[in-house]
Amino acid sequence: MSVSSANGTVVIQYRDSFSKAVAKNVIVVVIGISINYINVGLIHTFCKHQIFYTNPRYVLFIHLVVNDMLQVTLSLCMFIISYTIYKINASVCCTFILMALIMTENTPLNLACMALECYIAICFPLRHAQICTIKRTLILIGLIWTTTMLSCLPDLFITLATVPLDFFQSKIFCLRKTTFPNPIILEKRNITYIVYLIVVWFVIFFTYFKILSTAKTASSNAKKAKNTIILHGFQVLLCITNYISPQFQDSLIQRFPENSTDSLFAFYIVLMIMPRAISPIVYGIRDTSFRKYLKTYLLCKSPQ
Image (cartoon, rainbow, N blue to C red; front, side, top):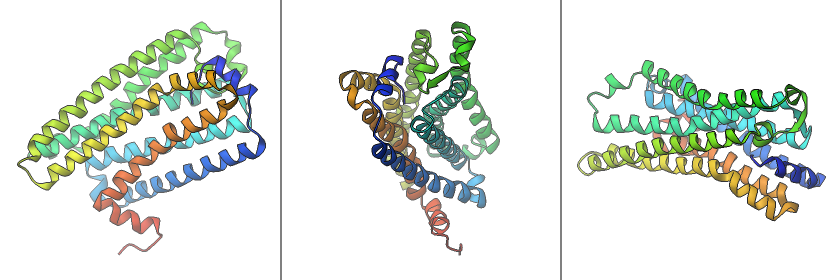
């Protein structure tokens, strides 16, 4: 959750009652555990069957699942800390925020790579096995992490150069803008998000229309791939809402300061937690191969 430093003060002034705080934490924990339970089932299914871990498409998918699971776990810990410990060491908060930012930026790049893999599979089926190998897929995942880390680590370096070192020993309410308060960081992040989204949307639209032209004369696999690209586009839309949500949070908290914690909770559930449930639902249930094995493991049945 991201609000400005001034809004962090607003949150401190208006804290939830004990019963409301318990209710919110129970809701978040139940949702988080449910999502991660399905994600663990997906990862277990992936690791147990060669049909999945030798397919670049499923390797990219499981990377998205692992990234989402780590993000859900981290955000869940930060949410509980905000209600229990409340203020934590700034250096620990800095680590949490950096990890959250890196994993947030991983998502749209991973979706773009999955869209490209679909495009190659449908439009160049004879060369798909040659182009999309497991080794190249792992290299691509490494490039995704390298790109996002190079994007986020300057936030830490700018903060180290512009704030006193005592700041990292102080206790703060762990928010993005209280951890990295320099306005240069905000401008850099806005430019980074714009570049990311332009590139990702170009890939989504390019692959969609290429697959659409193929689907008019090809098999049902092309039409299924077209629907998959649409789902990728919907997930990217959720990424956009996550990027622009701080502006909405700021305006709501400034207008309704007494309901600031409720506004943050609503944004947290809708924009941080629920989008993480889309990947397991879309792929774990929609994909017939995954659905067959996943149902077996989630219901604790013996595989036939």
